[in-house]
Length: 186
Image (cartoon, rainbow, N blue to C red; front, side, top):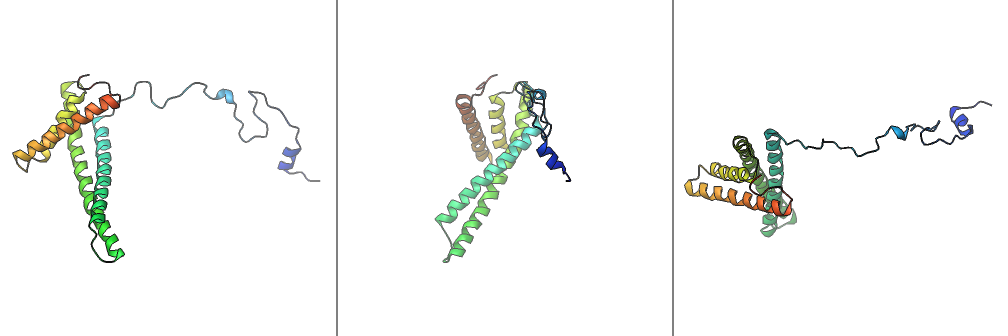
C-alpha cells in the first residue's frame, strides 16, 4: 500500500508540545518564547516634531479636503434649495453643478491659506525660538493680511482680524478641551 505524505502525517503518533517545543507537523512552528513579552512602540518615547515642510503638506492637504467637503455640502444645500429644471434628471444635474461649483472653490481657497500660514508659523517659531500659540495667532493674522492685500486696507484688516480671532478661538478651545500644554506661553 502506497503512503502519501499527508497519510503519514495523519498516522504519526501525536506529540504533545511543551511550552517551548513547537508542533512537529504544524506549518506555524514558532516558539512563543522568542516573541517579545513587553509593550512595543513604533516611535521612541520622545515624539519627533514634524519639520516645517511636513507640517505644510499636512496642513495644505487636510485644509483642501475640508474645504472641498464643506464646499460640496454648501453646493448640495444650494442645489436642493433652488433646483433648476422641471424633470428629476435636470434637478439632479443642477444639484451636481452646484456641488462642483462650490467645492473646488472652497477647497482651493483653504489650501492656499494653509500654504501661506504654514511657512509663516514655522518662521515665527524659528526666529522667536519658542513654539507657542502666539506664533499661530500672528501667522494667521499675517496670512489674512497677505491674502486680501489686493482688495484694499479695509479688507486686509478684516481678513487679518478674522485670522487672529479664528486661531485665538482654536488655541483657547484646544487648551481647555484638547489637553494642549500651554495657552499662550510655553
